Image (cartoon, rainbow, N blue to C red; front, side):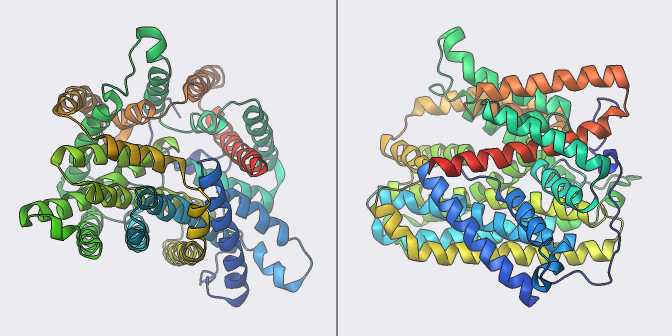
Length: 540
Protein backbone atom coordinates (compact mmCIF):
# COMPACT_ATOMS: atom_id res chain seq x y z
CA UNK A 1 0.00 0.00 0.00
CA UNK A 2 1.34 3.44 -0.90
CA UNK A 3 1.26 6.38 1.48
CA UNK A 4 -1.93 7.57 -0.18
CA UNK A 5 -5.23 6.82 1.46
CA UNK A 6 -6.66 3.55 0.18
CA UNK A 7 -9.80 3.56 2.28
CA UNK A 8 -7.77 2.24 5.24
CA UNK A 9 -8.98 -1.27 4.33
CA UNK A 10 -8.40 -3.99 6.90
CA UNK A 11 -6.96 -6.24 4.24
CA UNK A 12 -3.67 -4.72 5.42
CA UNK A 13 -3.62 -6.93 8.50
CA UNK A 14 -0.63 -9.22 8.85
CA UNK A 15 -2.94 -11.98 7.76
CA UNK A 16 -6.65 -11.23 7.54
CA UNK A 17 -8.40 -12.79 10.50
CA UNK A 18 -10.74 -15.58 9.53
CA UNK A 19 -13.05 -16.89 12.28
CA UNK A 20 -12.58 -20.61 12.77
CA UNK A 21 -16.32 -21.12 12.65
CA UNK A 22 -19.26 -18.90 11.83
CA UNK A 23 -22.39 -20.26 13.51
CA UNK A 24 -25.80 -19.58 12.06
CA UNK A 25 -26.75 -17.48 15.06
CA UNK A 26 -24.66 -14.93 16.92
CA UNK A 27 -24.39 -15.47 20.70
CA UNK A 28 -27.06 -13.52 22.53
CA UNK A 29 -26.36 -10.98 25.23
CA UNK A 30 -29.33 -12.36 27.13
CA UNK A 31 -27.90 -15.84 27.65
CA UNK A 32 -27.77 -16.31 31.43
CA UNK A 33 -23.98 -16.62 31.80
CA UNK A 34 -23.25 -13.81 29.35
CA UNK A 35 -25.73 -11.48 31.02
CA UNK A 36 -24.42 -12.17 34.54
CA UNK A 37 -20.78 -11.51 33.62
CA UNK A 38 -21.84 -8.51 31.55
CA UNK A 39 -23.64 -6.90 34.50
CA UNK A 40 -20.62 -7.47 36.76
CA UNK A 41 -18.25 -5.89 34.23
CA UNK A 42 -20.66 -2.99 33.66
CA UNK A 43 -20.66 -2.16 37.38
CA UNK A 44 -16.87 -2.38 37.39
CA UNK A 45 -16.58 -0.10 34.35
CA UNK A 46 -19.07 2.43 35.70
CA UNK A 47 -17.32 2.69 39.09
CA UNK A 48 -13.89 3.04 37.49
CA UNK A 49 -15.25 5.69 35.13
CA UNK A 50 -16.86 7.73 37.92
CA UNK A 51 -13.77 7.56 40.11
CA UNK A 52 -11.35 8.58 37.39
CA UNK A 53 -13.46 11.35 35.81
CA UNK A 54 -13.92 13.02 39.21
CA UNK A 55 -10.45 12.43 40.65
CA UNK A 56 -8.21 12.77 37.62
CA UNK A 57 -10.45 14.13 34.89
CA UNK A 58 -10.08 11.25 32.41
CA UNK A 59 -11.91 8.10 31.45
CA UNK A 60 -9.69 5.23 30.34
CA UNK A 61 -10.22 2.76 27.53
CA UNK A 62 -11.75 -0.06 29.59
CA UNK A 63 -12.81 -2.13 26.56
CA UNK A 64 -9.27 -3.51 26.25
CA UNK A 65 -9.26 -4.26 29.99
CA UNK A 66 -12.55 -6.16 29.60
CA UNK A 67 -11.14 -8.10 26.66
CA UNK A 68 -8.14 -9.20 28.72
CA UNK A 69 -10.33 -10.11 31.73
CA UNK A 70 -12.64 -12.17 29.52
CA UNK A 71 -9.73 -13.94 27.82
CA UNK A 72 -8.28 -14.77 31.24
CA UNK A 73 -11.48 -16.16 32.74
CA UNK A 74 -12.17 -18.19 29.60
CA UNK A 75 -9.04 -20.19 30.49
CA UNK A 76 -10.47 -21.17 33.91
CA UNK A 77 -11.41 -24.87 33.67
CA UNK A 78 -14.94 -24.40 35.01
CA UNK A 79 -17.96 -24.90 32.76
CA UNK A 80 -19.39 -21.44 33.56
CA UNK A 81 -16.33 -19.72 32.09
CA UNK A 82 -15.53 -22.00 29.14
CA UNK A 83 -18.26 -20.41 27.02
CA UNK A 84 -16.25 -17.20 26.95
CA UNK A 85 -13.63 -18.73 24.69
CA UNK A 86 -16.04 -17.62 21.98
CA UNK A 87 -14.65 -14.39 20.50
CA UNK A 88 -18.07 -12.89 19.87
CA UNK A 89 -18.93 -13.23 23.58
CA UNK A 90 -15.62 -11.56 24.45
CA UNK A 91 -16.61 -8.75 22.08
CA UNK A 92 -19.95 -8.35 23.90
CA UNK A 93 -18.15 -8.07 27.23
CA UNK A 94 -15.80 -5.32 26.06
CA UNK A 95 -18.78 -3.50 24.55
CA UNK A 96 -20.71 -3.54 27.83
CA UNK A 97 -17.88 -2.29 30.01
CA UNK A 98 -16.81 0.52 27.68
CA UNK A 99 -20.43 1.66 27.38
CA UNK A 100 -20.75 1.81 31.16
CA UNK A 101 -17.43 3.65 31.57
CA UNK A 102 -17.82 6.32 28.90
CA UNK A 103 -21.59 6.57 29.11
CA UNK A 104 -21.70 7.01 32.87
CA UNK A 105 -18.71 9.31 33.33
CA UNK A 106 -18.54 11.46 30.21
CA UNK A 107 -22.14 11.56 29.03
CA UNK A 108 -24.16 11.60 32.28
CA UNK A 109 -22.04 12.74 35.25
CA UNK A 110 -20.33 15.66 33.45
CA UNK A 111 -23.62 17.37 32.46
CA UNK A 112 -25.03 16.85 35.99
CA UNK A 113 -22.01 18.45 37.64
CA UNK A 114 -22.60 21.73 35.78
CA UNK A 115 -25.88 22.38 37.61
CA UNK A 116 -24.45 21.28 40.95
CA UNK A 117 -21.64 23.84 40.66
CA UNK A 118 -24.14 26.53 39.67
CA UNK A 119 -26.16 25.81 42.82
CA UNK A 120 -29.26 24.73 40.88
CA UNK A 121 -29.53 21.41 42.68
CA UNK A 122 -33.17 20.80 41.73
CA UNK A 123 -32.17 20.65 38.05
CA UNK A 124 -29.49 18.00 38.51
CA UNK A 125 -31.99 15.09 38.15
CA UNK A 126 -33.55 16.81 35.12
CA UNK A 127 -30.14 17.02 33.43
CA UNK A 128 -29.40 13.43 34.40
CA UNK A 129 -32.51 12.18 32.59
CA UNK A 130 -31.93 14.46 29.59
CA UNK A 131 -28.32 13.33 29.29
CA UNK A 132 -29.35 9.67 29.52
CA UNK A 133 -31.87 10.14 26.71
CA UNK A 134 -29.25 11.97 24.64
CA UNK A 135 -26.84 9.13 25.27
CA UNK A 136 -29.32 6.55 23.96
CA UNK A 137 -30.05 8.65 20.86
CA UNK A 138 -26.31 9.00 20.33
CA UNK A 139 -25.68 5.25 20.44
CA UNK A 140 -28.70 4.53 18.25
CA UNK A 141 -27.50 6.88 15.53
CA UNK A 142 -24.04 5.31 15.30
CA UNK A 143 -25.63 1.84 15.31
CA UNK A 144 -27.70 2.93 12.33
CA UNK A 145 -24.95 4.77 10.40
CA UNK A 146 -21.97 2.50 11.09
CA UNK A 147 -20.58 1.17 7.80
CA UNK A 148 -22.05 3.92 5.68
CA UNK A 149 -19.92 5.95 3.29
CA UNK A 150 -19.26 8.61 5.94
CA UNK A 151 -18.55 6.22 8.83
CA UNK A 152 -17.29 3.04 7.12
CA UNK A 153 -16.42 -0.16 8.94
CA UNK A 154 -13.17 -0.08 6.98
CA UNK A 155 -12.24 3.20 8.67
CA UNK A 156 -9.48 3.26 11.26
CA UNK A 157 -11.38 3.45 14.60
CA UNK A 158 -8.05 2.78 16.43
CA UNK A 159 -9.31 1.60 19.84
CA UNK A 160 -11.51 -0.93 18.06
CA UNK A 161 -8.53 -2.33 16.18
CA UNK A 162 -6.52 -2.57 19.41
CA UNK A 163 -9.32 -4.44 21.22
CA UNK A 164 -9.81 -6.82 18.31
CA UNK A 165 -6.09 -7.51 18.00
CA UNK A 166 -5.88 -8.36 21.72
CA UNK A 167 -8.75 -10.81 21.42
CA UNK A 168 -7.39 -12.38 18.21
CA UNK A 169 -3.90 -12.76 19.70
CA UNK A 170 -5.40 -14.51 22.72
CA UNK A 171 -7.19 -16.89 20.37
CA UNK A 172 -4.60 -17.63 17.67
CA UNK A 173 -1.16 -16.89 19.12
CA UNK A 174 1.67 -17.29 16.59
CA UNK A 175 3.46 -14.54 14.69
CA UNK A 176 0.59 -12.12 15.06
CA UNK A 177 0.67 -12.46 18.87
CA UNK A 178 4.44 -11.89 18.96
CA UNK A 179 4.21 -8.70 16.93
CA UNK A 180 1.25 -7.53 19.00
CA UNK A 181 3.17 -8.31 22.18
CA UNK A 182 6.18 -6.34 20.96
CA UNK A 183 3.88 -3.42 20.22
CA UNK A 184 2.37 -3.76 23.69
CA UNK A 185 5.80 -3.50 25.30
CA UNK A 186 6.62 -0.43 23.21
CA UNK A 187 3.30 1.17 24.14
CA UNK A 188 3.66 0.43 27.84
CA UNK A 189 7.30 1.52 27.98
CA UNK A 190 6.63 4.75 26.13
CA UNK A 191 3.64 5.55 28.34
CA UNK A 192 5.74 5.03 31.49
CA UNK A 193 8.23 7.54 30.06
CA UNK A 194 5.43 10.04 29.58
CA UNK A 195 5.09 9.61 25.82
CA UNK A 196 1.46 9.54 24.55
CA UNK A 197 1.84 6.26 22.71
CA UNK A 198 -1.81 5.97 21.62
CA UNK A 199 -1.25 8.69 19.05
CA UNK A 200 2.06 7.04 18.05
CA UNK A 201 0.22 3.80 17.26
CA UNK A 202 -2.60 5.57 15.43
CA UNK A 203 -0.07 7.26 13.13
CA UNK A 204 1.11 3.87 11.87
CA UNK A 205 -2.32 2.97 10.53
CA UNK A 206 -4.23 6.20 9.85
CA UNK A 207 -4.46 8.65 6.98
CA UNK A 208 -1.07 10.36 6.89
CA UNK A 209 -2.29 13.78 5.80
CA UNK A 210 -5.01 13.94 8.46
CA UNK A 211 -2.58 12.87 11.18
CA UNK A 212 0.13 15.29 10.06
CA UNK A 213 -2.39 18.10 10.46
CA UNK A 214 -3.35 16.76 13.89
CA UNK A 215 0.31 16.85 14.86
CA UNK A 216 0.75 20.38 13.55
CA UNK A 217 -2.35 21.45 15.45
CA UNK A 218 -1.04 19.98 18.70
CA UNK A 219 2.33 21.67 18.28
CA UNK A 220 0.76 25.00 17.34
CA UNK A 221 -1.36 24.96 20.47
CA UNK A 222 1.57 23.84 22.59
CA UNK A 223 4.17 26.39 21.46
CA UNK A 224 2.30 29.45 20.13
CA UNK A 225 2.65 31.24 23.46
CA UNK A 226 6.40 30.65 23.62
CA UNK A 227 7.17 31.39 19.97
CA UNK A 228 4.96 34.37 19.14
CA UNK A 229 3.72 35.34 22.62
CA UNK A 230 0.08 34.77 21.68
CA UNK A 231 -2.41 32.72 23.64
CA UNK A 232 -4.42 31.35 20.73
CA UNK A 233 -7.23 30.46 23.12
CA UNK A 234 -7.66 34.12 24.08
CA UNK A 235 -8.30 35.03 20.43
CA UNK A 236 -10.57 31.99 19.95
CA UNK A 237 -8.41 30.63 17.12
CA UNK A 238 -9.03 26.91 17.87
CA UNK A 239 -12.76 27.49 18.25
CA UNK A 240 -13.04 29.48 15.03
CA UNK A 241 -11.04 26.93 13.02
CA UNK A 242 -13.26 24.11 14.31
CA UNK A 243 -16.42 26.08 13.48
CA UNK A 244 -15.24 26.70 9.92
CA UNK A 245 -14.02 23.13 9.40
CA UNK A 246 -17.16 21.76 11.04
CA UNK A 247 -19.45 23.74 8.75
CA UNK A 248 -17.65 22.44 5.66
CA UNK A 249 -17.64 18.89 7.08
CA UNK A 250 -21.40 19.16 7.59
CA UNK A 251 -21.80 20.29 3.97
CA UNK A 252 -19.67 17.34 2.85
CA UNK A 253 -21.79 14.90 4.86
CA UNK A 254 -24.98 16.44 3.51
CA UNK A 255 -23.64 16.21 -0.04
CA UNK A 256 -22.86 12.53 0.50
CA UNK A 257 -26.40 11.92 1.72
CA UNK A 258 -28.21 13.68 -1.12
CA UNK A 259 -25.86 13.08 -4.05
CA UNK A 260 -26.62 10.42 -6.63
CA UNK A 261 -23.39 9.86 -8.49
CA UNK A 262 -23.97 8.00 -11.71
CA UNK A 263 -21.76 4.96 -12.09
CA UNK A 264 -20.64 5.14 -8.49
CA UNK A 265 -20.20 1.84 -6.72
CA UNK A 266 -19.68 3.46 -3.31
CA UNK A 267 -22.86 1.90 -1.92
CA UNK A 268 -21.52 -1.54 -2.87
CA UNK A 269 -18.63 -1.14 -0.45
CA UNK A 270 -20.83 -0.72 2.62
CA UNK A 271 -23.68 -2.56 4.30
CA UNK A 272 -25.59 0.71 4.80
CA UNK A 273 -26.62 3.07 2.00
CA UNK A 274 -26.70 6.85 1.71
CA UNK A 275 -30.45 6.61 2.19
CA UNK A 276 -29.88 4.81 5.50
CA UNK A 277 -27.43 7.54 6.52
CA UNK A 278 -29.82 10.36 5.66
CA UNK A 279 -32.80 8.69 7.32
CA UNK A 280 -30.87 7.92 10.52
CA UNK A 281 -29.42 11.42 10.82
CA UNK A 282 -32.84 12.96 10.14
CA UNK A 283 -34.65 10.84 12.71
CA UNK A 284 -31.84 11.44 15.18
CA UNK A 285 -32.20 15.18 14.77
CA UNK A 286 -35.95 14.98 15.40
CA UNK A 287 -35.23 12.92 18.53
CA UNK A 288 -32.77 15.59 19.70
CA UNK A 289 -35.41 18.29 19.12
CA UNK A 290 -37.90 16.34 21.22
CA UNK A 291 -35.37 15.89 24.03
CA UNK A 292 -34.35 19.55 23.97
CA UNK A 293 -38.02 20.55 24.19
CA UNK A 294 -38.50 18.15 27.10
CA UNK A 295 -35.53 19.68 28.91
CA UNK A 296 -36.88 23.19 28.34
CA UNK A 297 -40.25 22.13 29.76
CA UNK A 298 -38.90 20.17 32.74
CA UNK A 299 -36.39 22.84 33.74
CA UNK A 300 -38.90 25.68 33.53
CA UNK A 301 -36.70 27.86 31.31
CA UNK A 302 -39.60 28.22 28.89
CA UNK A 303 -41.26 30.57 31.39
CA UNK A 304 -38.35 33.02 31.08
CA UNK A 305 -38.26 33.03 27.26
CA UNK A 306 -40.30 34.55 24.50
CA UNK A 307 -41.74 32.06 22.01
CA UNK A 308 -39.19 32.90 19.26
CA UNK A 309 -36.31 32.53 21.76
CA UNK A 310 -37.71 29.22 23.00
CA UNK A 311 -37.97 27.88 19.46
CA UNK A 312 -34.44 29.10 18.75
CA UNK A 313 -33.16 27.34 21.87
CA UNK A 314 -34.78 24.00 21.04
CA UNK A 315 -33.65 24.06 17.40
CA UNK A 316 -30.11 25.20 18.26
CA UNK A 317 -29.68 22.68 21.09
CA UNK A 318 -30.66 19.86 18.71
CA UNK A 319 -28.31 21.17 16.00
CA UNK A 320 -25.48 21.44 18.54
CA UNK A 321 -26.02 17.88 19.75
CA UNK A 322 -26.13 16.47 16.23
CA UNK A 323 -23.16 18.38 14.81
CA UNK A 324 -21.11 17.68 17.94
CA UNK A 325 -21.52 13.93 17.59
CA UNK A 326 -20.84 13.97 13.84
CA UNK A 327 -17.60 15.92 14.32
CA UNK A 328 -16.56 13.80 17.29
CA UNK A 329 -17.21 10.68 15.19
CA UNK A 330 -15.02 11.92 12.33
CA UNK A 331 -12.16 12.75 14.70
CA UNK A 332 -12.49 9.43 16.53
CA UNK A 333 -12.47 7.46 13.28
CA UNK A 334 -9.37 9.11 11.85
CA UNK A 335 -7.29 9.92 14.92
CA UNK A 336 -8.64 7.99 17.89
CA UNK A 337 -9.03 11.30 19.73
CA UNK A 338 -12.36 13.03 19.95
CA UNK A 339 -12.75 16.64 21.15
CA UNK A 340 -16.14 16.21 22.84
CA UNK A 341 -15.39 18.78 25.55
CA UNK A 342 -14.05 21.25 23.01
CA UNK A 343 -17.09 21.00 20.74
CA UNK A 344 -19.36 21.48 23.76
CA UNK A 345 -17.41 24.61 24.68
CA UNK A 346 -17.73 25.95 21.13
CA UNK A 347 -21.51 25.61 21.12
CA UNK A 348 -21.63 27.13 24.59
CA UNK A 349 -19.85 30.21 23.27
CA UNK A 350 -22.21 30.44 20.30
CA UNK A 351 -25.19 30.07 22.65
CA UNK A 352 -23.83 32.91 24.77
CA UNK A 353 -23.56 35.09 21.67
CA UNK A 354 -27.17 34.28 20.76
CA UNK A 355 -28.20 35.53 24.20
CA UNK A 356 -29.51 32.52 26.13
CA UNK A 357 -29.59 32.94 29.91
CA UNK A 358 -27.32 31.00 32.28
CA UNK A 359 -29.72 28.12 32.99
CA UNK A 360 -30.45 27.65 29.32
CA UNK A 361 -26.73 27.71 28.57
CA UNK A 362 -26.11 25.05 31.21
CA UNK A 363 -28.77 22.84 29.61
CA UNK A 364 -27.31 23.51 26.16
CA UNK A 365 -23.74 22.60 27.05
CA UNK A 366 -24.81 19.65 29.22
CA UNK A 367 -26.98 18.23 26.47
CA UNK A 368 -24.23 18.72 23.89
CA UNK A 369 -21.68 17.08 26.19
CA UNK A 370 -23.93 14.00 26.51
CA UNK A 371 -23.62 13.36 22.77
CA UNK A 372 -20.40 12.39 21.12
CA UNK A 373 -18.59 10.14 23.61
CA UNK A 374 -21.02 7.25 23.11
CA UNK A 375 -21.00 7.81 19.35
CA UNK A 376 -17.22 7.37 19.23
CA UNK A 377 -17.01 4.67 21.88
CA UNK A 378 -19.67 2.43 20.36
CA UNK A 379 -18.09 2.84 16.92
CA UNK A 380 -14.83 1.48 18.38
CA UNK A 381 -16.69 -1.54 19.73
CA UNK A 382 -18.52 -2.11 16.43
CA UNK A 383 -15.18 -1.93 14.63
CA UNK A 384 -13.73 -4.59 16.93
CA UNK A 385 -16.77 -6.78 16.37
CA UNK A 386 -16.58 -6.27 12.61
CA UNK A 387 -12.99 -7.56 12.54
CA UNK A 388 -13.77 -10.51 14.82
CA UNK A 389 -16.78 -11.50 12.70
CA UNK A 390 -14.69 -11.74 9.53
CA UNK A 391 -14.43 -8.12 8.32
CA UNK A 392 -17.81 -8.11 6.62
CA UNK A 393 -17.50 -11.45 4.81
CA UNK A 394 -20.57 -12.85 6.53
CA UNK A 395 -23.33 -10.18 6.22
CA UNK A 396 -26.07 -12.03 8.12
CA UNK A 397 -23.78 -12.84 11.04
CA UNK A 398 -22.41 -9.30 11.01
CA UNK A 399 -25.93 -7.87 11.22
CA UNK A 400 -26.80 -10.12 14.17
CA UNK A 401 -23.56 -9.20 15.94
CA UNK A 402 -24.09 -5.47 15.61
CA UNK A 403 -27.58 -5.82 17.05
CA UNK A 404 -26.30 -7.72 20.08
CA UNK A 405 -23.56 -5.12 20.56
CA UNK A 406 -26.20 -2.39 20.51
CA UNK A 407 -28.09 -4.19 23.29
CA UNK A 408 -24.80 -4.59 25.19
CA UNK A 409 -24.07 -0.87 24.93
CA UNK A 410 -27.55 0.00 26.21
CA UNK A 411 -27.11 -2.41 29.13
CA UNK A 412 -23.85 -0.66 30.03
CA UNK A 413 -25.61 2.72 29.92
CA UNK A 414 -28.46 1.46 32.12
CA UNK A 415 -26.12 0.04 34.78
CA UNK A 416 -24.15 3.29 34.86
CA UNK A 417 -27.37 5.34 35.09
CA UNK A 418 -28.64 3.30 38.05
CA UNK A 419 -25.30 3.59 39.81
CA UNK A 420 -25.22 7.35 39.33
CA UNK A 421 -28.72 7.74 40.80
CA UNK A 422 -27.46 6.30 44.09
CA UNK A 423 -23.96 7.81 44.12
CA UNK A 424 -24.02 11.28 42.60
CA UNK A 425 -25.03 13.16 45.76
CA UNK A 426 -22.25 11.58 47.80
CA UNK A 427 -19.73 12.39 45.05
CA UNK A 428 -20.83 15.99 44.55
CA UNK A 429 -21.32 16.75 48.25
CA UNK A 430 -17.73 15.69 48.88
CA UNK A 431 -16.54 18.05 46.12
CA UNK A 432 -15.79 15.24 43.69
CA UNK A 433 -16.84 16.76 40.37
CA UNK A 434 -15.34 16.37 36.89
CA UNK A 435 -12.70 19.11 36.40
CA UNK A 436 -14.19 20.05 33.04
CA UNK A 437 -17.33 21.26 34.84
CA UNK A 438 -15.37 24.04 36.53
CA UNK A 439 -14.23 25.29 33.10
CA UNK A 440 -17.75 25.20 31.64
CA UNK A 441 -19.35 26.94 34.62
CA UNK A 442 -16.66 29.64 34.77
CA UNK A 443 -17.23 30.27 31.05
CA UNK A 444 -20.97 30.65 31.62
CA UNK A 445 -20.39 33.03 34.51
CA UNK A 446 -17.84 35.14 32.62
CA UNK A 447 -20.07 35.99 29.68
CA UNK A 448 -18.84 37.12 26.27
CA UNK A 449 -18.69 40.15 24.01
CA UNK A 450 -19.24 41.09 20.34
CA UNK A 451 -15.46 40.99 19.91
CA UNK A 452 -15.64 37.22 20.20
CA UNK A 453 -17.83 37.05 17.10
CA UNK A 454 -15.14 38.72 15.02
CA UNK A 455 -12.50 36.30 16.30
CA UNK A 456 -14.68 33.28 15.51
CA UNK A 457 -15.59 34.51 12.03
CA UNK A 458 -11.98 35.42 11.23
CA UNK A 459 -10.54 32.04 12.16
CA UNK A 460 -13.46 30.11 10.69
CA UNK A 461 -12.24 31.08 7.22
CA UNK A 462 -8.90 29.19 7.27
CA UNK A 463 -10.63 26.25 8.99
CA UNK A 464 -13.21 26.05 6.21
CA UNK A 465 -10.53 26.33 3.51
CA UNK A 466 -8.43 23.55 5.05
CA UNK A 467 -11.40 21.20 5.34
CA UNK A 468 -12.47 21.93 1.77
CA UNK A 469 -8.96 21.33 0.38
CA UNK A 470 -8.61 18.01 2.20
CA UNK A 471 -12.03 16.72 1.24
CA UNK A 472 -14.14 14.28 3.21
CA UNK A 473 -11.58 11.45 2.97
CA UNK A 474 -8.70 13.31 4.63
CA UNK A 475 -10.57 15.59 7.08
CA UNK A 476 -7.48 17.77 7.54
CA UNK A 477 -9.49 20.76 8.75
CA UNK A 478 -11.27 18.83 11.50
CA UNK A 479 -8.05 17.12 12.59
CA UNK A 480 -6.03 20.36 12.63
CA UNK A 481 -8.76 21.98 14.75
CA UNK A 482 -8.79 18.95 17.05
CA UNK A 483 -5.07 19.44 17.66
CA UNK A 484 -5.54 23.16 18.32
CA UNK A 485 -8.18 22.43 20.95
CA UNK A 486 -5.99 20.02 22.94
CA UNK A 487 -2.97 21.18 24.94
CA UNK A 488 -0.58 18.26 24.55
CA UNK A 489 2.56 19.20 22.60
CA UNK A 490 4.18 15.86 23.47
CA UNK A 491 1.44 14.17 21.46
CA UNK A 492 2.29 16.40 18.50
CA UNK A 493 5.93 15.33 18.57
CA UNK A 494 4.87 11.68 18.97
CA UNK A 495 2.59 11.96 15.95
CA UNK A 496 5.21 13.48 13.67
CA UNK A 497 7.90 11.05 14.89
CA UNK A 498 5.64 8.06 14.20
CA UNK A 499 4.74 9.32 10.73
CA UNK A 500 8.41 9.92 9.93
CA UNK A 501 9.33 6.37 11.00
CA UNK A 502 6.43 5.00 8.96
CA UNK A 503 7.52 6.85 5.82
CA UNK A 504 11.14 5.69 6.21
CA UNK A 505 10.12 2.04 6.73
CA UNK A 506 7.84 2.10 3.69
CA UNK A 507 10.65 3.61 1.59
CA UNK A 508 13.04 0.84 2.70
CA UNK A 509 10.77 -2.22 2.74
CA UNK A 510 7.96 -1.23 0.43
CA UNK A 511 4.24 -1.66 0.89
CA UNK A 512 4.56 -5.08 2.54
CA UNK A 513 5.73 -3.48 5.80
CA UNK A 514 2.37 -1.79 6.28
CA UNK A 515 0.63 -4.97 7.44
CA UNK A 516 3.25 -5.54 10.15
CA UNK A 517 3.03 -1.91 11.25
CA UNK A 518 -0.73 -2.25 11.43
CA UNK A 519 -0.67 -5.15 13.89
CA UNK A 520 2.20 -3.67 15.91
CA UNK A 521 0.25 -0.40 16.15
CA UNK A 522 -2.69 -2.27 17.65
CA UNK A 523 -0.34 -3.57 20.33
CA UNK A 524 1.09 -0.10 20.98
CA UNK A 525 -2.39 1.34 21.49
CA UNK A 526 -3.39 -1.54 23.76
CA UNK A 527 -0.17 -1.43 25.80
CA UNK A 528 -0.45 2.32 26.28
CA UNK A 529 -4.14 2.07 27.25
CA UNK A 530 -3.50 -0.67 29.82
CA UNK A 531 -0.58 1.22 31.36
CA UNK A 532 -2.59 4.45 31.43
CA UNK A 533 -5.48 2.66 33.12
CA UNK A 534 -3.18 1.07 35.69
CA UNK A 535 -1.31 4.25 36.55
CA UNK A 536 -4.51 6.29 36.79
CA UNK A 537 -6.06 3.69 39.07
CA UNK A 538 -2.99 3.70 41.31
CA UNK A 539 -3.25 7.50 41.65
CA UNK A 540 -6.66 7.09 43.24
